[in-house]
Amino acid sequence: MKKILMIGVVALLGLSGNIYAQGRHNFENELRRQRNRIELARRNGAVTPKEYDKLLKEQHAIRNAIHKARRDGYIDAGEAKSIRGKLDRSAHRLRKYRTNNEY
Image 1 (cartoon, rainbow, N blue to C red):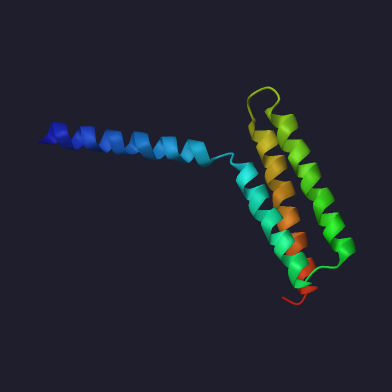
Image 2 (tube, one colour; image 1 turned 180 degrees about the vertical axis):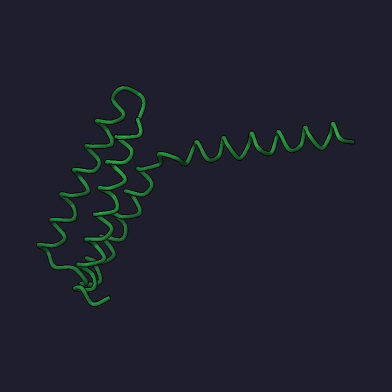
């Protein structure tokens, strides 16, 4: 009984570690979600055309950073931190533009 329980625990830990590793550097999905939020804000009139252009340029720069980081097939911790910062700043800027600083 103990042996079966230990095998189950090890299998569960192995699966959860694999799932965590797959989602660890999933920057494209977050970039896609941000792009969808930008498009929605444009359609709703929450952002001006100038703000929309700035947000799209920022998205393009983030996409380039991701591709540059993946050129060697591996995103190291420094690259991931840099990309994460760019994504966070972009999300903050979108929130600021949508609400015009009316939090």
